[in-house]
Length: 87
Image 1 (cartoon, one colour):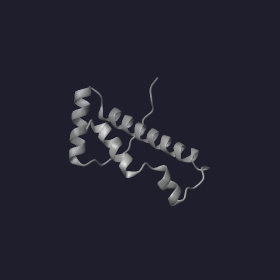
Image 2 (cartoon, one colour):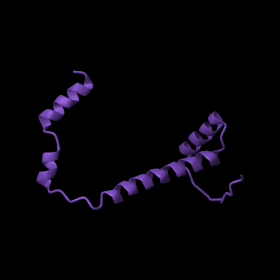
Image 3 (tube, helix red, strand yellow):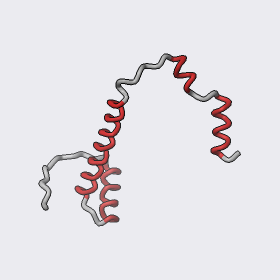
Image 4 (cartoon, rainbow, N blue to C red):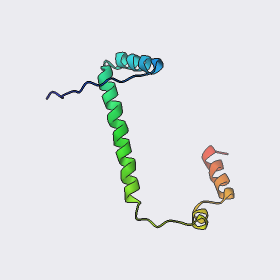
């Protein structure tokens, strides 16, 4: 099935254009395909973020004190950091 394309002028800075051209050659894809894929991915991520925000709109607002209680203490954060770093 052939996909209909709409022509658009997009101005890229030189380094970005060079990188896109190089990636197209390395992957044997057209620059159009790479740009379309990147735009699709960016829009999908935006849609996911917006859906997550909409899902949380009915959550109650927390006061500053409630927010502080929900966060680990600085001592606990230090211990967690040490565990993650392997110290």
